[in-house]
Length: 211
Image 1 (cartoon, rainbow, N blue to C red):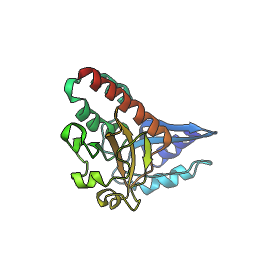
Image 2: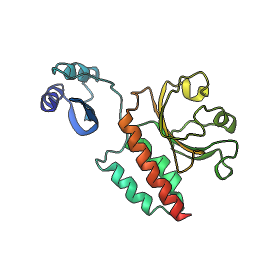
Image 3: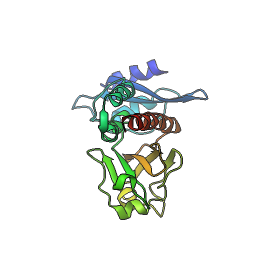
Image 4: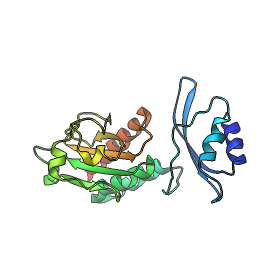
């Protein structure tokens, strides 16, 4: 099926740059495919091409401007090992690339903020939040990794107003929380949440050793 999909996308003018298997179970797979499209071709044509292959459905179509690297997670682990005291900022910078997300934040939860700071680290495109907003987050502190509902009634408007899909994981302590957001979707899968928990766990271990 993947071969038939590649042929159909090629006929629509798309050049496949990378394919990531995001999830595979029960005879179905979710793949994240990055393509280059000539300026004269409309992106909507990709949806038509994909759906022409029996058994294929399109979950989302979105622009991608990140750096392509088929070994992103391994590269992050290697970088963390030599990051010294910059573990938290490195994690915030790299998580959006790994998950093809919009931003990442590391926040300290009340009542006693982690090391005296509400925002510990943030990626370049992360929303600017204040201590009052962190105090009102329903998932802070966070006892375990979880997929988050940004449209719940008690979520700060800075998240809900953007239609952002979110997931989070504690970094060695329920009061130190890593948040990853994908504006406009698609939703994060449970397999992505498990990958996030694994990477955040490694970063927490490195940070403890460095401390």
